[in-house]
Length: 98
Image (cartoon, rainbow, N blue to C red; front, top):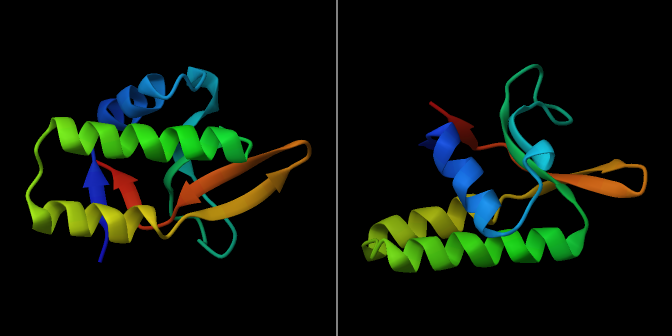
């Protein structure tokens, strides 16, 4: 299972969380992904919290059905982390861009 989204949608949610556009990834390939790409954001744990909050706010504003909300929760819960020195990249291996 996975979720495909428009790159612009990912970028808009990140902008709503005040994440610098330079820290938004639509083509990240994390550990064990063997070249497959997914979406991610770079920052600290506060960045991650702000981003997830923006995802929830966007989903509520869009009035998603319970099935869509459940699927979104399942996908957003698969977050993985790679260390990048003083910051981390948080990425979702099962969320890709169209």
